[in-house]
Amino acid sequence: MNDSRTRLDKINTRIRNNPVLSLLIAVSTLVIGLSTFTNATRNLMDLLSGAEQRPAINGLWQAQVSYDWPNANYQERFNFAGSDTQLYGSATFTGSLNGILEGEIRGDSLRFITKTPESLGSGPIQEAIHRYQGKMVGDEITFVMQTEGGYSAHVPIEFTAKRSDNPAPAKSEPTQN
Image (cartoon, rainbow, N blue to C red; front, side, top):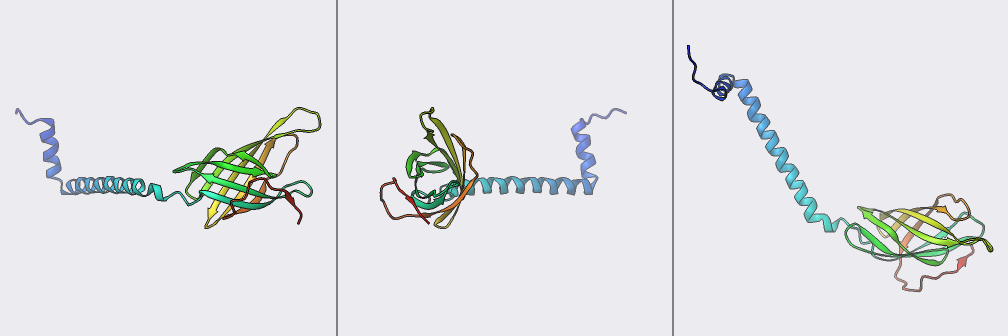
């Protein structure tokens, strides 16, 4: 007996003769198609709404910050700029203006660093790095700032910045509480 059917023809015949297998293949094809369409739709919606995901953070912000050494209360200022996930601008540390480096914003979270020189008497100048992480809620940003390097160790500092309409210069003096 010589069967001239190809292997594909034999498989097709078996599938057609088994209604459960036929139904399973049809349902699987439908699920895969819906999944692909749903993912494509989600990606398209993310692309179209991507510009709207960045919160309105650009502009001036200020915060009363109490550092971890005696009588160290400062009115600090932040001037944010950027678009998409980029964040740049300036931030004060103990009233001294510093540029924002490695700034990034994702959703309502932001992070950046600033660097300040520290000197101790006639010793060499050392660089302190301040790492800021913040979460924006409305017109407030809650921050945690960690300092590393420099001449002394510091604990993380928590504070809240509020949107400012005051375009005053960034240099500020310590305040007493």
